[in-house]
Length: 257
Image (cartoon, rainbow, N blue to C red; front, side, top):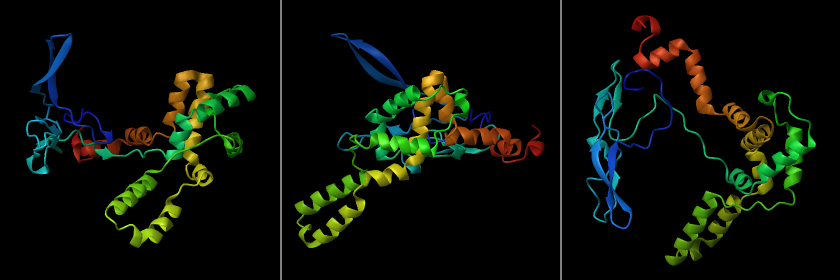
C-alpha cells in the first residue's frame, strides 16, 4: 500500500519481517524451521530488520546497521528505506498505560466494577453515547477502598537496581541520603495515581461497561473513540488536500488525481 502510494500509513514502525521460512519434518514428530528466501515489496526493498546472517561473537543477532540501509522510491517518487520494517508516513506512538491501570485491569477490578455497574443501573439505551461521568468515577474509587492494588513503577524498580549496584560497588554509603530522598520522591501514591491516570482508567471502564450491553461490537466502538491512531486516520481521510499531499508531495489538483 505504501510502495504503490495507495494509502497513507499511520502509526508506529513495524517489526521488520522480510524472511520466508519453511519447515522440514524431523524425527520424534519435530520440525526444523529453515530460512529459505527473502521477500521484497513493490519498491524493490526488503524490510527485514534482524540480521541473522552476521551474528555477534556471543552468537546473538543484531539489527541491520544504518550504514547498510538503502534508499528506494515509491511509485510517486517518495523516498522509502529497506532494512528495518515499514516506517509510517505519519508516526503516531501509543503511550503505554500507567502501572496502576495495568494493575486494575489484571486484577479484574475494572471487570468486576463493570458487572456491578450493569446490575445496579438501568440498561444503556444507546451504548454509542454512553459516558462514564466524574460522579461514576467517585463511586469507582469508593469501590476500590478495600481492594488490594499492588504495583511497582519502572522508575522505582530502576532505582532499586541502581541501589543494589551501588552497594556491590561500595558507593552506596556515601550517597545513602540522596538515594533515600529519591526513593521517597519516586514511591508511588495510589490515590494520586488514580487521579493522574483517571482518563485512561475511565476509557477502560467505559469499554467494559458498554460490552455488558452491546457485547464485543460495543467494546470496539467505545475503544475507537479514544484511539489516537484511528482518529488521526479519520482526520486525514476527511482532508483530501492533506491526504494527496502526503502521497504525492503535491496537492490533489497538481497531481492530476
